Image (cartoon, rainbow, N blue to C red; front, side):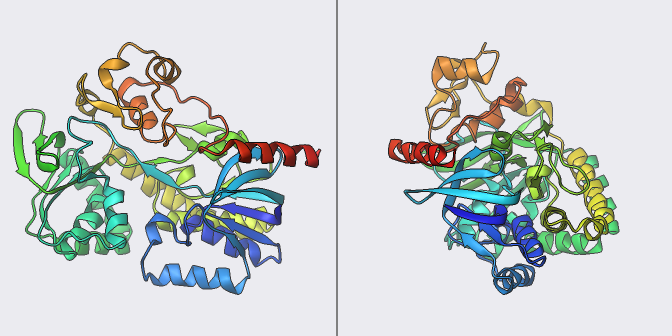
Length: 419
């Protein structure tokens, strides 16, 4: 068993800030992440000065780490069961748990979305950081939100020919959001630099992909504005519709949700005593907001309430920006109609939309057609089907990820020993 005063789950910007800040109080801190190195999706494989600064603080404060460790179950009040590779692990937080589990991409299925070289927008970003060779290849970036710009810019810098950036939000909404960026000059400067990286590429608003076609690999994207269609040739299609908070672990702890995010107060406290949430899991707002929230959580988890309250104003400013972003890039209702009856909606179990039309909830679809029962455990198809059908989110059951029977038996033995 590994124990610490404060256990932080997730080593992205929010988790790093929470762990470093909590360790400054003299508390023992354990930082846990599924990846092999810290940084999360946003700082993965980068030489960011901000990332380097937080990593240096983690090292200076002697924060213990457990990477390649996935939490699969919890044990009240602050105990957890994890898997480090194939080895089961018991983790115990003596004082508090900070959940910084981040978010994942929202995919809305359309005909052809399972073709090779159709990837998520954030997935493309991760692949590029891992050395994906796109030189000379034609790329289309489609979906919604500010992430389209840096990914298109990264593709262009890597030598791809970015044919078009397709934004589903209407032009007036995007223009209004852009006009408000004067309040945050740094973000405005970033947006301009990104756009200049692919200055000759059309940025098309009020449009979305309705079909990907190809001969074993994607060759073209069919795009509509609701009135007419155009066909854009491509070798790579990057598409996703924003992010959804990764709330499975908070749900296991019993944390309350509101509109797919964990409910927190101004000090990042959840509805469960001693459990804090920070970053995208508490609402999509970007890395700067995540750092502030992580810092607040680290301070509050170690009892430094006065210091934490000094950051509440900054937290509120980021929340206001996030609200404007969510309003500008709200998903249009037409996206719910793009998938046809023969469109695959659950890739793990190869389930098409027509197989579950008429189901009233994900549970019924699971019984009827095994939706959400594959390796991803509904993390991809679940949010998509909630968007398409308006289904309510269901609770989660342990284990959160597939584990061996031997590991489950070990967890049971550990629980017995604890009692």
